[in-house]
Structure formats: C-alpha cells, structure tokens
Amino acid sequence: MIYVVGLGPGDYEQLPIGVLHRLLGDLPVYLRTDQHPVVEQLVQEGMQYESFDAIYEKHDDFLAVYEEITNFLIEKAEKTDLVYATPGHPMLAELAVQLLLARTKDITIVGGQSFLDPLFAAVKIDPIEGFQLFDALAFNIDYYQPQQQTVIAQVFDQFVASNLKLDLMEKLEDETLVTLVSAAGTKQEWVKTVPLYELDHEYEGVNNLLSVYIPAQK
Ligand SMILES: C[S@@+](CC[C@H](N)C(=O)[O-])C[C@H]1O[C@@H](n2cnc3c(N)ncnc32)[C@H](O)[C@@H]1O
Image (cartoon, rainbow, N blue to C red; front, side, top):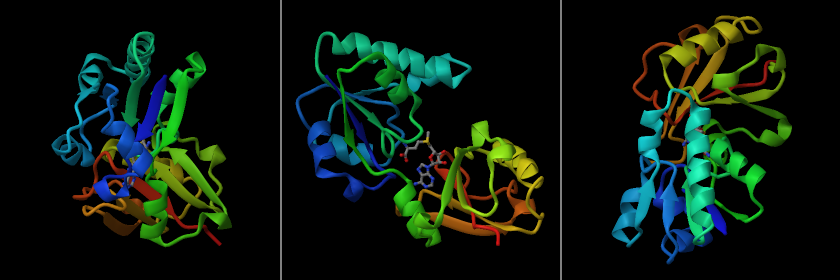
C-alpha cells in the first residue's frame, strides 16, 4: 500500500494528526521534496526519509520527473508498504499522485492541508461566491472569466509572471489590482497588491510558494 500524505503549506502546527502518525510511523517515507519547512522538525522527532529532489536535476521537463518518481514508488510498493509525501495536499497540483492513481489501486490518500485555505484567509475571500483555480504554467486566457474570483498557482519566477501578465492584459485593464500571495499561512506569509502592469516586477516574496489572486471584476 502507498499511503499518500501532504506536508501542508509550511508550518508544523498545520499537520493533521493522521499525517503526522504516518510520517513518524514505521514505514519508509519518501518526500517529493525536502525543501519544505516542516521537514527539519519532523527529522528532530525521528522521521527518516529519502527525497526525490535529485530527480529534478536529471530531467528537463516535469513529466519525466514525475514518471520516474511514480515508477520508483510502484516498484518499491511491490516489496513494502510506504509513505509518499508531497507539499500541501496531495490531491492539489501533484502530478505524481495522479500518475500513481492511474496505475495502481493499492493507494490511500491520507490527507494534508492545501495552500488554498490559508490563501483564502490571507486575501479574506469566501470561495463559495465563485472561484477559479489555474496553473500559470498551463494558463489559457480563453478559460479565464473575470467575473469570478481567481487564483493562479505556480507563478515560479518573473518569466512566468511576465507571460501571465501579457495574457491577462487581453481581458483586464493594465491598472486592475492583483494580489501576490507567497507562503500563505506560514510565518513567512507575504501579501502584496499591485496593478496588473507591475505583476512581473521584482519582489522579495517571489519564490516557489507564490500564487496570484485576482478579485472578481464587477
Ligand atoms: C505544485 S503546486 C503544489 C500545491 C500543493 N500540493 C498544495 O496543496 O498546496 C505548488 C504551487 O502551489 C502554490 N502554493 C503552495 N504553497 C503556497 C502558499 N503557502 N502560499 C501561496 N501559494 C502556495 C504556489 O503557486 C506553488 O507554485
């Protein structure tokens, strides 16, 4: 059995108890990445792990990375039960989990907290009013509806932000206010509202935990 858990947005206090038990249990633990703030404390509490960070260096595209991770986990799981841990929640924007689900029924999604809850708190919105979630790396402006609250994830760097800005300018005024949210829900949370034309400017909070929120346009 592959037990799939999420490490949450970044703080140890946000780990659900069931996830914690899996991470500190007897089964081997594999982390998609150990570049996550909770790992240090988990190690202090006795967690032993292997991470897949080195696999990212070997490949030029993400699909090849996640296929290698999936192959490794499926092969290992034939010999022993194991735990696979992703950042956030494992069912949100985790391609290796989708590949695993397509290939095996021997898998249990245990849980975790995604970045969305703390992001909603950071920008103080209720998604029940209507909400869209996009991947900046696969953004298609045709599907973007300005009348809905929108979150765009995977805004990794200025290059991605720049392409996103140009796409959004097809449907929004240059002065439309957008909010950059980095590390929501953690002690490093960083929130900055800027006009759309400044979306790709250089900011200290831009890193691999950055999402962009666009309010509903009336
Ligand atoms: C590959 S997705 C993984 C999401 C993860 N599985 C989850 O549930 O949070 C990574 C993207 O999620 C967004 N993200 C993750 N943590 C975040 C946080 N604390 N605050 C804002 N955005 C975050 C960023 O856009 C980042 O590029």
